[in-house]
Image (tube, rainbow, N blue to C red):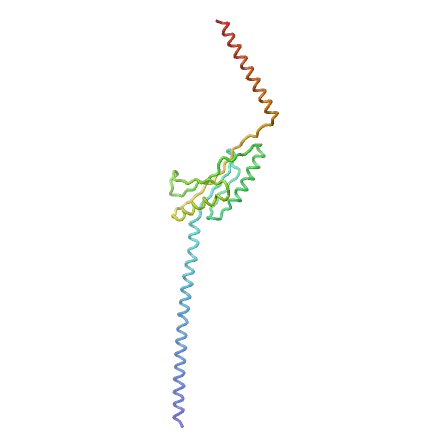
Length: 206
């Protein structure tokens, strides 16, 4: 009667040891999965940390001026990242300032030039790049040049953007023009008569 109970106990102990070993193996497998996920997370973290470095290398110093004659009517100076400078806003504000100045001074502004000069710290002045920027859409050409310089690891990239207007005096009314022409004609006739009299006097002296 006691023998079967001993065997039963032994069988129970064997089953328990099998269960314990199974639990141990399952517990050991869990950390392996966690290690893989940790590695994946570490790789993602590294990739995200590299993005700001590329963005920083594409920064450039921008100085923008708008002149009417020799008078500066609008100016901006800042550090800009590629694609973030609102060129359209600058053009609109610059146009408003030029119109206000023209009304105050009673002149007619005529666009002379609108150019951007791109350079870096290591470039010689003879190697500076000049680009025409007549519309806000043309600014993408400037930033494409800046992007090439940034990819070549150029430091101290700078863009000088200058818009120049000539100050032209408006044409006078037709009546005023006719009066001026009449006055000029009379002055010419008087000066011609004076020269003729001088010649006659010189002739009589001989």
